[in-house]
Image (cartoon, rainbow, N blue to C red; front, side, top):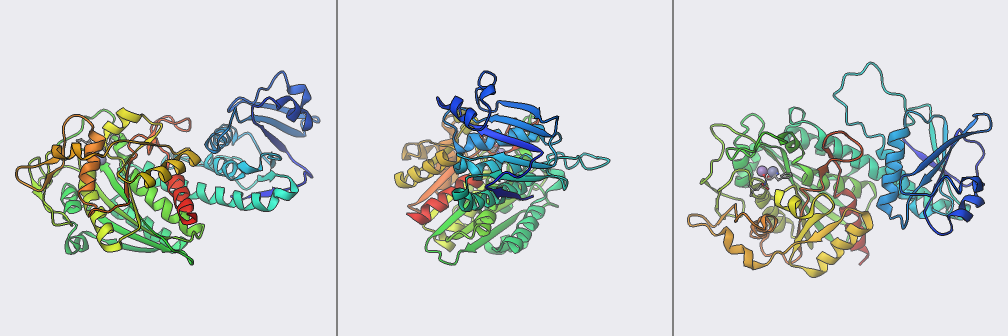
Length: 481
Ligand code: BES
Ligand code: MN
Ligand code: ZN
């Protein structure tokens, strides 16, 4: 779908005017001819007032953005409005953003996200008629001198939403419909389409490469073996190299340390880190960012089989270090140990960021409002936090002090994969740090609480594409530094 920009209103079937809740609301309503609405519309976040004008020829909508609306608020309001109204609006739809042009990207992003269809596996007689089908057209109305910038912003917002929906579809797909190989094939296709290199290591290649920890976790799924996928994008004027690593567990049963049954269906989402990385690669290539971006995702299931790893087993890893597996449900850190070490050794990026739906502990600490940020680099922490505030994909720092390291000492191997019952997000971070090869500019993002959750857009838990916007913003800021 496209959204065009206009600087003059010629005709419309639906006219949607957005307002921020400020002290000047009354004047702003008046200036657009809505003085009569002063008592019935307060521009609260998400508030909408729909009415018909001119003998039902024109449907008009006043849409509230709330007080101090941030980019993420605007995105949310438009997504929510269009999700609720998409079957009720038709024809030529104009969004009046005059005076609010700075939000154009997020308006476009949110509007298109409303077309996301989580029910792909439902049997339907025919496609639902909506504002996103052929019969309708969307326009954003801006002041003339802002049109050029708004046009670019709208394009970026739409491209972002497309990528977010692609990776949401991956994360929301049930395990029955996505093996590690299926995800690898999606990445191959995306690389071809958007312009980045993709190298897929199948189970044989993984063995040759020495990705032993990934293979160990994958041993519980004999007929759906793991994949390590390396993506590389190099912008024309790229000066800096950024490495992104993602956890891609397409289903986490816990393995022999089996999870309880209740809520286990959510573990189809245990690939949130990998889809953030895939999305960031895809979007960087689409936006032609001047950066050298390397993405590595470790893809596997964590299942049960006679061959599956058992508690107490000692496994090899790509780094050469041995790992005692105390709990097979702490599988994310195992597969990441290979991917992170490979990234650090082979690609030596200036900045290395890994993302993983790694611990329940992180959810208990931060809920679903922010991801956990662990790094010993204060400068990197600040830039990541800044990108988080700019995009609304927030981060909150958790400790990574050496005080916690001794919890991972093993009698029989170089390290064990489980700490005490406390500070679980941090001990997981300490485990990963052991495999960074002393990288001085590395950060770990625990996105267990933010990658999927209950949202306003679905009845059950669903994917958020958390990280796509965050990583893109971080990279954009970083190449400007
Ligand atoms: N994928 C889970 C973490 C998770 C749980 C993410 C719930 C999102 C929602 C991870 O592999 C896991 O099982 N972690 C264990 C680690 C424990 C065994 C040290 C956990 O957090 O319970
Ligand atoms: Mn697990
Ligand atoms: Zn997991």
